Length: 448
Image 1 (cartoon, one colour):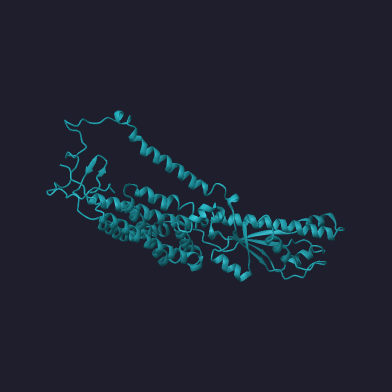
Image 2 (cartoon, helix red, strand yellow; image 1 turned 120 degrees about the vertical axis):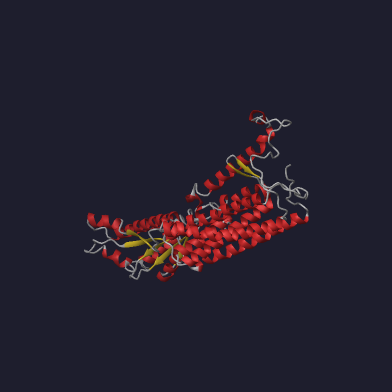
């Protein structure tokens, strides 16, 4: 937007479009010689604003993007992982509890993970539900025959090692699922060594082969706990699809804003060497915002459709619940686009920069779709409570991987879309009505 000026009437007899054949103000005349770049470069005022803004934006983007992912292990806090004890065997001689209970108690009480992991004790049904809703990043499962299998190691049938299961959940993201698998595998290996010390101490007469088996008796089997499709980008398709929705709303909103301002004569249009300046149309800021928002609602239909055509039809992305996915995509693009229009209406020329930070710079590192929020600094976890990418990625993830379950993030996605849409409408129209009441109109005189 142009800066506010007192209201003036447009040229009563506008000459229509002016192209490079006309002589708008700013072009050299006999009285106004053409400026030279060398002379302008010596003006400090020309350098100040772009230099300061470029430096600030570059610094902030670097801190935001790298700050969220540079050290996920040290930032890890309360990563939810399921802990399941199905062991039904009798306790070993001299012990009061079966090994499954001993292992799960030791894992849950471990000082090494008390701040980094949120161990959730579940039964098999609870585990299946938690994996299917994306509420846990993985699971450590002690099977029903575990104690019996360990006891068999001290007999002549000591050829089969007992197994602890490590389940992954790729739908929550490959990095988060991988981190959970690494934690679970380390816990299972430590449990194996602890059991080995007990067995070798109890059977000192065993032959060397048996003692070697008893020293590290447990094998670890890693399996997928909740499978996703082969065309799901290893659990990243939800993030990139949500990113397309945000970019569609952001770019579309800005293109509509620029196109409307150009058509109404508040901005010049330049395409290569061709320059056009249209007559200024008298219109209030509020009515301009109405026009832009209605156009955003219409164009978002096309944007949502094309995103699905490109990703699902052409590229073959796995995508169940297609009607739900389209509706969610449309509403997400619309909410972002309306937010862009409101910010541009409020901030004018720097509106695109402000909306870039709101919808892109702050939103991407706080999305939790590539790096789990539990593995990011607290500042990004705070941003995730209201930044749009986290809400949209959670909703898309629920539709694509978790059967569109409300408790898998879809309900929160819909709620935050509604909140964002309402906030954009209230903020945008509150600001434009304020400007209009103050007489800060956008009309500018037409050049002779």
